[in-house]
Image (cartoon, rainbow over all chains, first blue to last red; front, side, top):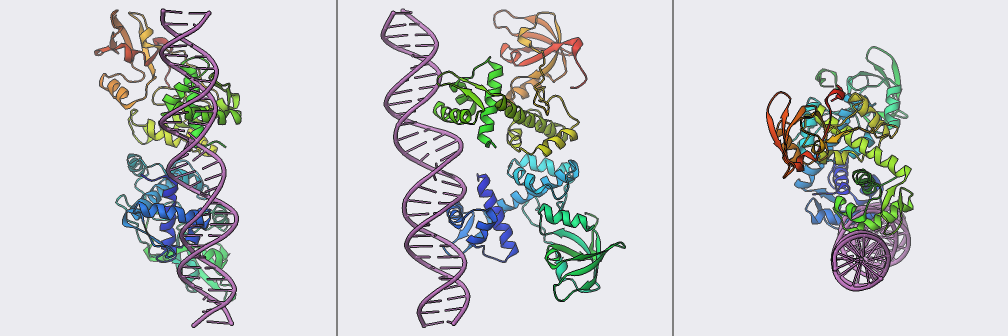
Length: 226
Length: 226
DNA sequence: ATAAAAATTTAGACTAGCCTAAATTTTTAG
DNA sequence: CTAAAAATTTAGGCTAGTCTAAATTTTTAT
């Protein structure tokens, strides 16, 4: 049985490992957990003792199979609760992160199974992130970042990489919602900002900073699940 | 801001204060929190420092107004989540206590308000316990224990005092459900057990131990809210 | 009323998770 | 290739919440 804190470390190791590839650094974890590097080292020793991570001093860290299984369970719970908060309780997608951060630590398997059924076994959370399967598989979506799309291409907004309230409110403000179609009309070479048309409607300016956090898919492969 | 643990102490002081009258003893709290008396003393000093309880050494303990307000918030959250678990997720009334025990510590007021609305602002939880109002009032029901009902009386089962799985399963087994009408046919003087008829249906035997944990109301005052 | 029993508090210690400061290892730049 | 910089770990310490054992206060029973 792991603690609240251990679960958070596992979850963060998982997401850092995916973002950058392979090993995760002590400093990156310290930043993500809002603690100091020394505290992270302590926890890594503990997680290594419990066989949840592969850890060699000064060499960075990687989840074991068991560690990954647990991390995916936490992520599954987090994302299911986010769906609940948005679809059933009517929260905005920019309001649910912190609450889900607490709900995710309730470990009853029965609860998670019933919640999943109640929500209709959703495949994606309100930010477009795939929900790990009960068996512990993370579906691989082949999305690209909007910042990597070529001029003239026609894509669909599938997910966002940043979950902060400010970022999501900014998207709302620009009429960018999950599932909307985006046509890249102009790419500015000096700052990599883009000018896009949303659906058949308005044309908006998107900075590179924002475009890097928008995941898109080619138009034809869009499914009904969003 | 209080911790998880502090909230549990406040909640337990509240319920012990109601069960017995007035002051709550260190030992009673130790038993209820599954800790030792020495640990309770430590925590009482802390809660007293925070002005959440009135505490004089060796004299027992009583909630301050602020302490009671916080306790009622925790209890409100607990009971609302129990309603959610039973009505929305389909749990049995005997399965929800432990899960609600975790959910009750999520303090977002927005979450509680939305959950309340979503559930239709229920007045009672699945065990018949009244749900404190958002303003922090605990509705007073004038229920009696079945063990105090006179022979021949016709009453309605409104709530249970014991929430353990075993106890609730036992009631299910005897066809005793909230809202059912009960007619006391026979009271055995030697062990205070009773023979009752449930509705117009079957007649069951109820031990004094069980009858003490069943709260009933006179037939005519039964409302539709159960 | 007072001695024994029960309840409660104090003293001292432990673990989890965090900290700062210092030491060590790895990486990087010249 | 080596010295400086950056990253990481170690050492020692803190708080919350728990414990056991011993001391103290209150209650109870004669």
